[in-house]
Image (cartoon, rainbow, N blue to C red; front, side, top):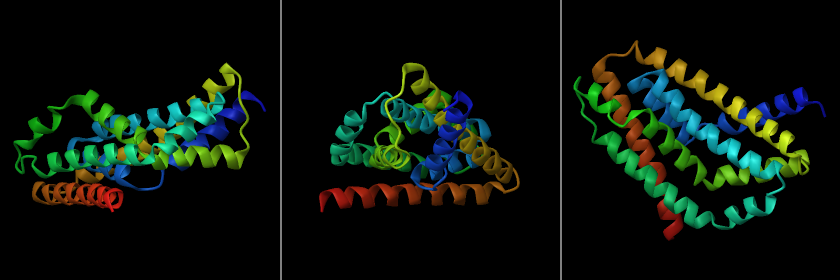
Length: 205
């Protein structure tokens, strides 16, 4: 397989992993609407980085390591759900007036990136997705260069999705009034809290 073919195939993998809407997508949409495309996109890059890391591990032949992570599903899901609930509470408690502009940026872009990186890395569905993808595509252990190219392709495909999503949401955000934006913000925080509480309830049941 040529380098170009490998890259584009892996980019499609990254796009397919990123595109389904879930709590990560909801969080990036909320940040794009509330704080602009840059914050939403940087948040998405956190997810793309986690996707690329798991892709690299799988391509290097570390499938056993991926399956080990899958075996830690309960712990990973619990940590991710607790962190998601903490983020949701932060969104729900955010200032509801124009003063929110300064507060929204207080965490900075690094915080936006690392929070989504942590959420995606602790999401068992991310690990399961890559295990299934490697099994379906019959991906064999790659050389160091090919593994890196595969991971870069996954990152590029995922980043493309997050870029388009954040830009679209940011453009939409410019058209809505502040009161409506506040309601959207609260609704997003509530949905994230529901996601987190549902997962925690499943784990404790």
